[in-house]
Amino acid sequence: MRLHARGLPQGFAETRIGQVVTTPVSGDRSDFILYSRSEPSDCRGYLAVITPVPQPVVCAAAPVVWGVHGLDYLVDGDVIAVDPTGFVRTLYRRSSRHNFILATEQCNSYCLMCSQPPRQMDDFSRLADHFRVIDLIDPATEDLGITGGEPTLYGDRFLELIAHCKQRLPNTALHVLTNGRLFFYRRFAERLSQVAHPDLILGIPLYSDVDFEHDFIVQARGAFEQTVIGMLNLDLHDVSVEIRIVLHRQTVRRLTKLAAMIARNFPFAFHVALMGLEPFGFVHRNVDVLWMDAAEYRDELSETVSILSAAGLPVSIYNHQLCTLNVDLWPFARKSISDWKNVYLDECEGCTVRDDCGGFFQSATRLHNKIAPIT
Image (cartoon, rainbow, N blue to C red; front, side):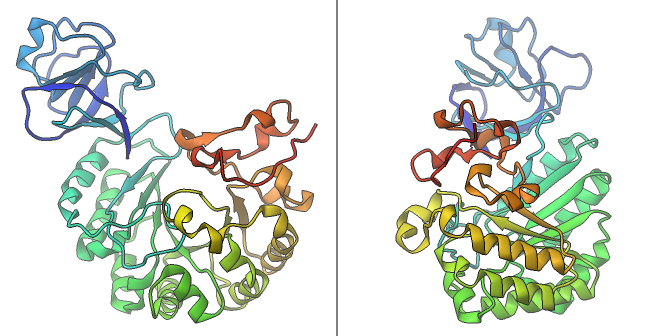
């Protein structure tokens, strides 16, 4: 979810979630939120109306937020939430390949480099909103992510969420980011398999081949054992697993040994993602134990990719700039940063490979790898 704008709410006391329409439509408008760049001639019957101009009298029949700016990218079919406070949140964009549902902000891990720090709060009531968003998403959407926090903390309701995606979005690939720890319970993995989603992948982090190092990074005792057994249980029940490794000082020192362990013990992995650090959230308070420039581990990264590729495992490198990688790694580098937080630095102007480069996180304008634009 992103916080986009403020307005002046009138006439409603609860959040409205609906599909965006940019021109008034006739008939049943119960799912529609009208976004008008000018004074709408008729806004009666909508869930809500948002507009950058003061509301006309005719809008008195609809909840209105006006004075909203910066939403010009909205198109018909996008899904937004309008809060009673006047905040407008974009929940789904038809034109984006990076749509996701933030299932919960609770988590049973406390990772040193978490970019979405968990909060001790009861936010399970938002599950109804997630179901509504799924109902409004365009069925032609190719990919959808579910993330957190830890989505599996919903338990049975997590399984219902996956089943609902299968029912409403049968042709949409579903990518769930989870620490995988609750799949230590074999029955939970089996029940997820029984949902039989046709295109489901679970992205699960594994940070070391040594238990106490992984546990230290995720700040949860016993997490290594739960994660490893969880992945084995998922494979036993034919649920696809992607292994994700965030690269920083604590993971790089045994990176090649971790690669060998993955090649030996998890040959079933659908994909292995080697991910650059996003300088956000907990990273700043743990920067001394985490940060290292990509130049310091580029050779270890080349060896790691070689080990995994030789084992027949698909490998990708995320969140890295091409000029920070050895040339042998370029074929594995992906443009992975979500479009709404992807930027390039002034130094990137004139770089001959910029169009193929993944760029930077918006939060990385100060803390980032040393770059040498290729000219």
